[in-house]
Every structure is written in C-alpha cells, then in structure tokens.
Length: 102
Image 1 (spheres, rainbow, N blue to C red):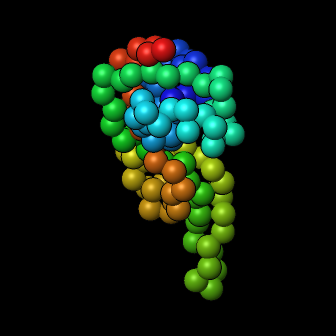
Image 2 (image 1 turned 90 degrees about the vertical axis):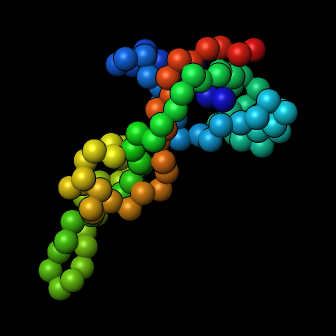
C-alpha cells in the first residue's frame, strides 16, 4: 500500500519504508494508519530488495562526543562511510514491477 501513486523514478523503481500488507489486512491498515487513509493505493510488486535507510547522521566531536550532521536523510546501503556514523530509523525497500491491484 502506498499513500500516493508511485512517481516515475530511475529504472521504474519505487522506494518505500512501509511494510507489505496482506490483502485481508488492507481495511485495518487504512483505518489505523493516518498516512494511508481510504485514498491509499494498492499495488503488487514483482520484486523488492533493501535499498537503504532513513537515518540521523552524526560525526565525532571533541571529548568523545558526537554531533548531529543531518536528520532523517536517505542513505543508500552502498554509502559505507556515511553508514558508519548513521543511526537508522527506517529501512527503505526498492520495489520493481509495480502493478495497480484494485
């Protein structure tokens, strides 16, 4: 389920931090999640794989402290040096082959 129709992205890939929802749970998800609501969109995906994380990024500071550099930024899993100083709050999953399902 997506709160808005998928946008056009490079390679036809859509990214989400929302977990997959089984068909029988759709009414409950729409009722309980304020972001989805009754106007959300249901899609099936051919494949999905972890893409990155939403994280707060820190840097070392004096006296064994850290300082926040950025909050709630998307960090791809390939960005190893950034991930060393990131505190992830959400996993981002790339979805391929989306098809409208309702």
